[in-house]
Every structure is written in structure tokens, then in C-alpha cells.
Image (cartoon, rainbow, N blue to C red; front, side, top):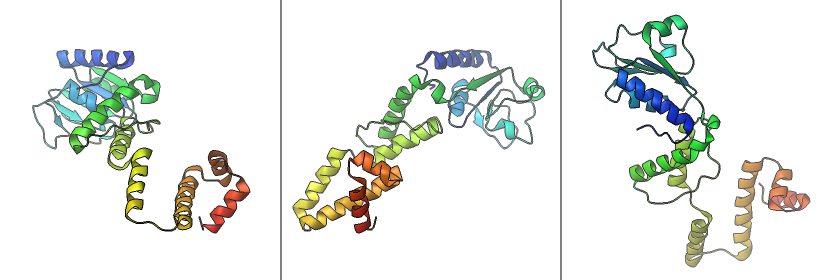
Length: 222
């Protein structure tokens, strides 16, 4: 399967379909996590990946641009890399090259990849929970986006769920109001310190006087 919703990825899929039909040797290149392996497997789903011995079967070789020992006369070769190949090497091995651009250059596809990875994660983890990705992490393209979704599904709870858990805790046991408030403030300020780094930014986002904030954080040893 190769997810192609945008006009850009539909064009890539059309090229891949042609390569698949004509049994062309293809070199796929681009940044980390742009889907090079997905596309390679789509073009040649039965290919052996990084075989260690010679074979007459179709093969997929990853990081081809970093190989020191190049393969000898494979029957069908699909390869991936991070950069274009030297023309001499390309002409010796390949009929076609495909550049996969980073997600930031076709952001309209992000929501579809989120839907795909979320459905995949729910099935694999056997977790039926809906999550919202407000700030998709595409720093490593599909790799970071997928990691973010799995992490949210496994570890993140929405605010309502967290408050419900807190309510259940108070039903069982609790400290005094002053002690509970102190624990809450300490947890809040620690999180804000990690997120915003400076007291100025914390005071701006929490709408609290900076002097008051500084005194509170000092008193709580945050």
C-alpha cells in the first residue's frame, strides 16, 4: 500500500505504477522518513530486502548511496538513498529515479497519514481511543509523526480523563487543602519550566505576575 491523497503523491504513485508494470530498476531518494521504503515495497512487494547473498529474485537495497560493494547484475533492483547518485553509477544500475519530498512540502497529506498511523496503532496495540494531534511532529517526516501518534495513544490522556483520575484519588485519600494546592502548583510550575524555559514566558502564558511567580517557585523549590 502507498498512501496517495495529494496531487503530488498521486503523481509519484503513477510513476511507481509504471515502474512496477515495466519492471524498471528504480532509485528512490530523499530525506529520512519520507516513505522511501514504503514506495520501494509498493513497486516490488515480493523483493528481498538487503539480501546478504546473490539471488535471482528482485531485491530492495536500502542506503544504496552509502554502499562500498555494489551488487552484480540483479534481475530487478529497487534501491533507496538520501541523495542523488553519481550519473555513472545511476546509468549502470537504474532506469528511473524518484525523489520523495519532505512532508513540509506537501502538508495536505499530513492528516491522511495521521489517520492511517492511528488506525494502524489502534489495531496493533489493541487500544480503542481517539486522540487529537494538534501539532504534528514532522521533524523526521513519517518517522516522527508515527512515533508521536504511538506515544500519544500509549501515554497521553486528555484533560478530562486526568481530572477524573484525580477525582478518584481524592475519593480514596487526600492531604489538607494547603498541601494539595502546594503539590499542584509544584507540578504545574515544573511542567511550565520545562516547556517555556524562562519565568517571563511562564508568567505570560499563566497570566500571573512575574514577581509573584518567582516567589512561588522559589518557595516551592522549583
